[in-house]
Length: 253
Image (cartoon, rainbow, N blue to C red; front, side, top):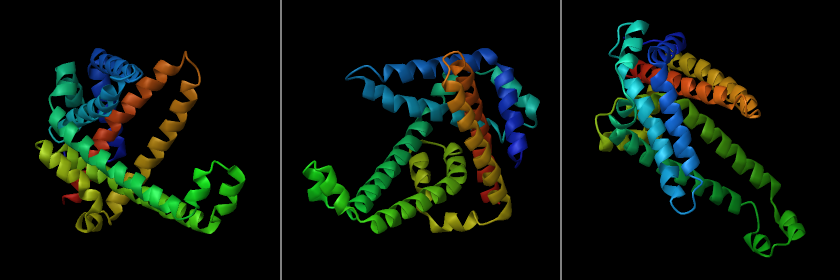
């Protein structure tokens, strides 16, 4: 399949889910189990790293099928012949490389936040544990300016993410996936994203993901509807994988 859009991504995600419902439910079950294991003191940190890597591995597996299938039905056939081992382990190295890169970027953003925050408050007042002194020391203008910069940066990274993720998914190994995760900082890559087709793809994608997040949050409010929320989020992950690859294809033209 060549380049597509959000409608095609929806169809591919649905067909993959329908093509092997047992596979999808099994994958959701494993991810839930790993998420719960994060609560174990001491070893929980291991599963805290394992969860995003396994989640990425599923998206990499599904995303790499997108250029190979000719239509939606073929995606269902791919799912029918896939196993949990395929989903989680076939491209685990690529997922691990992507996670390391994105984790590093998150640390850099965290450092930036600390720097912006420290410039707007008196750290000595914060250390005294005196709320009134701390509030009096806050430079509201500097804090609002820092938060605005951070918000704009996050929005920009969100715009770039589908294209970056698409390139990462199509990587061949750990090192290439790690390297491509830093395309967020490539001016030449930015330039390629300035086109109407990519903009529209990302615009619709962002709206879909935002609405899905709101619906999932509402469903999670009820313990009886939580399984539906988990299925929804898994379906969104499949949809994301297709969108990411379509984004990469647009940018490679």
